[in-house]
Image 1 (tube, helix red, strand yellow):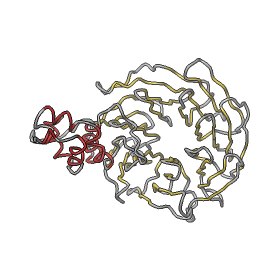
Image 2 (cartoon, helix red, strand yellow):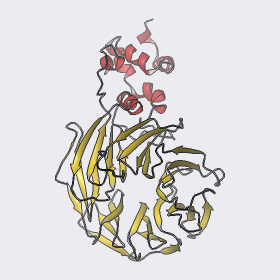
Image 3 (cartoon, one colour):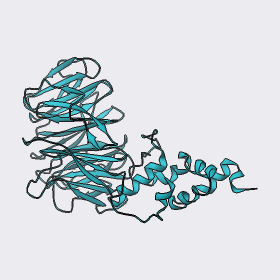
Image 4 (cartoon, one colour):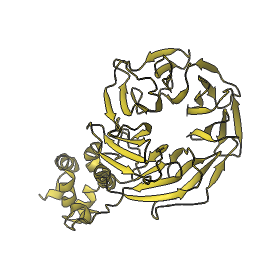
Length: 398
């Protein structure tokens, strides 16, 4: 019996013991073996161990339309830092931009407007004319979030605007007396935090807040749990209060305080839920921290320190092994592997003469987008800019 005539379940069992190099070489044996090896099921085990492969912590594939073999190849570029840098947009006035990514559309806030820009990944360019503009704030947009049906923005004018993504309609939510620094939304629930030292709860249809929590400190970040039963607030840590607290949605009562040794002024600037029990935070104290809500709240389970003692403005995770962070100086983006304690790769996006924080970053399976004070940058990880020898298995197997 020929190797290719073995039952498929036996072939899968054999191939699951091969590494990516061996699989690439095996795919060159014949057409039938190439077709079999290129199946996603063959690459799934390897993809689980890669950075940003699209296989998240619970086994869900978030990029099902991209072949896993292609994603595993791109994951090696993420790991080794092989990418091409592009400047997609520039502007003259220094701003505090924010980003959201929805498929092939990138949403970017600039001053009081939010533009929806179409991405052309083949030409690596951004369509300069936005598909849609969202406006209505009398001041700058501080943060905004996307849901399936709405774009919800928070402004320095103290208002929250709920824009319909399907119709030309918007609703203003009034309640905060100062700029709204942060907000999050899930399934009709909205949580906002403000410089006025309060956090407020809303729905998509409410014109006034359903509840208000006195925080006694400026609120810099909020995040709603995937279960929607609780939310987390991050404050400036300028008063004698824990900067990280978890609140019950129904009772609006504090149910937990995270951490025990925060320095004064070590405010929390970004919060990301990776799962109902895994939480990541960053801020002025230069650390990315991972919290497991099933364990003791007094101590994080893992932490990664920014090596140049810079504040960390934003983070995003791939749902599995990778963290990307944005630093406060010279537009530095860092890539971290959660299984290691030191930074894996870093990229400086601002010039030496113009230092700017990375105000926000987002990434897909192949691109990372980062916004600084005067530009929007892209890192394209699909291609290795170094000349590799043609004997590389990837060169032949793709």
